[in-house]
Image (cartoon, rainbow, N blue to C red):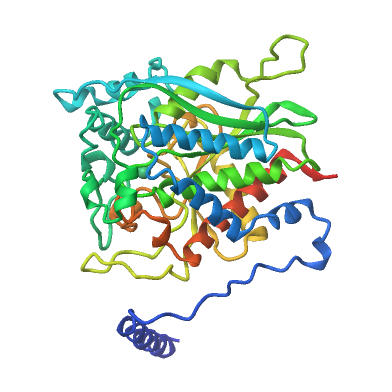
Length: 451
Ligand SMILES: [Zn+2]
């Protein structure tokens, strides 16, 4: 046994050396063909719905979002993107569309860091008893760093906080650079630079959603979310056109006229994620107490169905592995790329959230075509955090937010290269697999059938 394992190790070492030596040459492509539906499952409505997802259509929706540049909150390009998203949702039959309105007034930079959490809450115009009150320290620190930094109108957020690690796990292995690009002149594409030029200003904010009403339990719902605002003077293609398009594609598929669900599903595109989850905090603050209430009484209408779960999507495309020792990345999606599903182990609803995470993995096992799910317990720095003490809240991401994205695994994060053209079909396919995963899980949880 010992000898053979030594021989095995030596063989692996040689193989690894060969791979490293040829790191710049194209690697053999992975199987790209969609999984073929098994004959026994032809009438499985979940498989039929998953089959309505399409790589080219997903890419086209991301491309559509990139026409509004980085969609930074508090700008005309952000408002135009919200209008465009609403038009698309209506065209899918996901009606009526509605908007959550709130005020974003970033507080001036705090003299000390001690008041940072209060700054974040104040900016959301919210009450003290917020959903994110018990958020992991890392998550809160990241969010407030951005909020404090976004206080100026012309000055862009400082790198601290945004480039920070979340989730509280200690760093291991190689790291690459992180941080927010604050300089529009670093965008080499002149058209995109011009598109992103208008500075953000404080004031009223809106975010759009639509709801698929359940036929037998309209008073209960799953929430599927992604933030549509971005940063960094590019096209915010990955952060977060990739998550926004995923939510829109699911809205399209669930809204087809012959699709029914027992329970309701809400599709929401958050604003102000990048300034500290302000849009999601506003939603929780405005809607938490209204859950499950029939309004008006006897109408059979539930403006805010009871939350059964909240599934968030950020940065769905890029999983090229750990940076090399010199900080550079592989040019290719790594073959072992995965969709990272995270819940907050510290949340009051951690047990429920963990159960939802495993349901997503089981759905991925059965219905996704290319990339697996990995589950972790360190959800942070995302719009599901304000929900985590009230319902089962999870996030899907290209890599772990804390240990991986926070350590520089994605060089496009908040930088001028977050452009549609940066990503390959293998990258886009990771996002498609996340879409397959959430669609399959929610189709089962909400009780979807096709007439
Ligand atoms: Zn971001």
